[in-house]
Structure formats: structure tokens, C-alpha cells
Length: 312
Image (cartoon, rainbow, N blue to C red; front, side):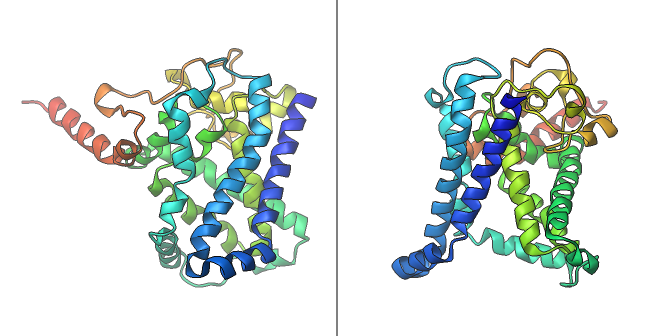
């Protein structure tokens, strides 16, 4: 049990530490004085590096001591540097006013600024945080499920499944469109009526637990706990190439969604092969540009397959 609780606790502690460090007003004012109009970009770079550093300090030792899948160190492969590139993806999305576009979409979808249930703001702070954690996880489960079931959404989410060496760096291997879609879903949590602060803390817990389940650590939850929380074991199976695991284990924090909606896969053995299981025309190499353009490749491959299947 210690091997289960210690890494979870350390991950959440690292997340809180990164959040507190990034929100320090003194540091923010210093950056603004030194860099002027470039301050937002500098602060974004610092935040990404800080987050990556704090997670690495926790994840790396556990991955070395208790690997879920034994293999050569990932740092020796091309995939390590590609995942670093994805992690820093926010650095060029920010200068391109990506989040301004997301704000516009949120305003268009959710319209007015009034919360759906204003009474939630009167609940104790801990209860608001608990609601935020549950809401983020529930929304992500269904968004994730639709990404696996609907071909147009899968063409973007498939990028996340191109990883062949799963570890904490895999967490941020996401297509830019999937990040935008996630922002739309996440905005709904704030619209519930809880405080922005509680939503931020809830999202931090969700985010760092997401890092935890992607680690290459030999942890599977025993007994009833496997029905409550997602483990790295469950999520490794989500990334497995085995056809039996396709579209399974879609939750991030709470495993009960998968058990309740019949998408749980919890065998006795560990998966051994990971990556994008797809027909040859729908496969893609470990290239950032190719993966960002993958939805176009996916569309062309499906159109070609449809034309071939048509009766003459």
C-alpha cells in the first residue's frame, strides 16, 4: 500500500508546489519589470519548465525503481525529445493567441456569464474542490469516450496514442485541436457555479493525477480500490495495442465510470506493446509535423477505403 500511496501523494504535492510557485505575485511582478511586453511569454516558458521539472523529480525515481514495463531508458530514443516538444507546445500556442480563440469559442458556446447553479458558491471550499475534481473527471471520461467512438474526433486524439514508450511525458502528447476541445469542456466546470479558485485547485488535482497514471510504474490497485481509482496499470492497458483493450479504461481519476459504463479492462497480466493500432494507411511516424497533420491523412485514408469498398 505504501508503494501506492507515496507516489500519489508526491505527485499531488509536486502539483501544489508548482501551482503555488507559478501564482506568486512577487515573481510575476519581477518578470514584468525585466521583460516588459515579453513577460507573458517568459512566464509561460518558466511555468512549463517548472511543471516538467517538478513532475520529473517525482516520476523518474519511481519509474527507475518500479518499472511497469522494462525497457531501454526513454531518454535514448527519439520519442523522448518528441514528447518534450509536445510538452512545450504551449510556448508557440500562446504567441499565436491560441487561448484568445478558445475564449471566443467559450463565449459563443456558453453565452452569458451567469453560473448555472449559483448556490454552489455557498458550499464549503473543500466541497467545491471535490465537485470540481468529480466534474472534470466525469466530463473528461465522456469526451475521451467520444474521441474513441467518433471518427472525426479520433483523428485528433489518435496523436496521443502514437506513443510507444508510455511514461509521464506521454500525458501532454496532444493535438492542438484536442487541447482546444478540452478547454471548452473544462470551462463548463467554472460555469457550474463554484469559485474560480476551487475550479483551479480541482483542475490541478486532475492534471497531476493524469501525470501519475501515465507513469511507467508497476502499480495496480488491489481489492475494492480498483473500482474507485484509476491506476497506472489500468491506463497502460488503455495505451496497449491489443484489440481487446481498444476504447477501454477511459477514466483519469475515478475508475467507477469505466466499471459503471462497461469500458473497464482489468486482466491479470501487464501489456507489452504500445502505440497506434491502425491499418497501414492510417499509421503515422514519430514526427511532430506529421502528427499535427494526421487528421488530414486519416480523412484521405478513410475516403480511399470507402471508394475501394464501393461496388463497381
